[in-house]
Image (cartoon, one colour):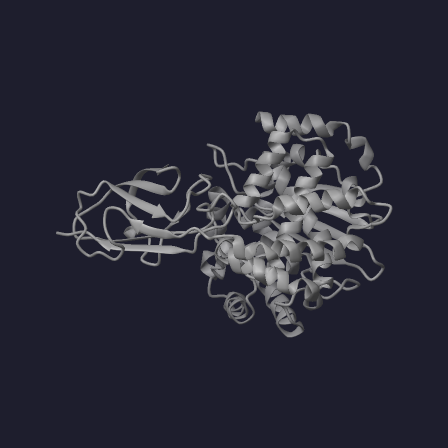
Length: 462
């Protein structure tokens, strides 16, 4: 256990006693979640095709590979393409099913909460899902992995137990009628999702569905500090998303201006609309506010802020300050929802700064011109020069459309020229086409603005 996590655990220990009135359910594995992850893996949905948890991914492949052409998988592929179903929409469907894989009653229908689903495709999907589970003997697969599931739950539990769930009522300002559930999604790769169920009586079930993004030398799941913050993040979604939705018309102009600047960075994180970006910003700012409320050391808070700026949320510190202002005026603003008009005004101010935020650009490659077809195979470095200094918060060099074989062998990479250049130390072959893409996820200005995607293509001489 690293020191960062130990610090958090010590800080939070005194709060465990305060959670008695909050309905909690300890981490578990959910058959519906695992089944849906299998289906969308077989349908080759990228976010459900990860092999980060290799041991489990191989178990899935061995058991289900022969069912890749099942009618359910073909139908799933069709609605994926037609309706864009993926990410949290998949997990939302999972929790809208009962133990017999029938759509739940007495809850808000999934097609009323998830625009990707409609009544027709949801009912057809569920009908085929029941057939698929029976024909593939999914229950046997699920029972056969009991030991693996139990070990995963055992590993996440110490982190989960340190979350102060009472804070959600204290901060968001509403009496809790929620049941908090932490579900481990072993088939989800590194994907994590915050989804919820709405009951007719006003009660809710709030889920944090946690993937497995890291494993140890034995191939087993690892959960640490980042898992703790991800839990906070995913539970926040169930409280934040509706706040933005209610006032999105008043936020549209500001949101669109900000999104125009960070669009490239957000696309690389699968955030493809201004609404999603503003939701994510408030979720992430609320995580930082949790840290402040629980007396996390300042270096931890600073690191969280820097991380979000690197992710493209350049206004995150201002947003955290707004949440601090809200919390100091709770007599006037009893709930965060009542403070939204102030946030709308703040966003107008932040979006006004957008024209003054300059996006860094690639201006040259020192060793050759992009697109050159006779680059010397003896070239040992590729130096990419930018229009301004970058933040020096990592590198984001991706494989292009030509595939992994076209990606150069990179022996080392480093910043140079006061962070205004990136030097890739490479080993090239003769008479070969190369391609790579620089993206704005980590290549950002000091203000947190990422570059536009920049594709590099060249060929070496014979």
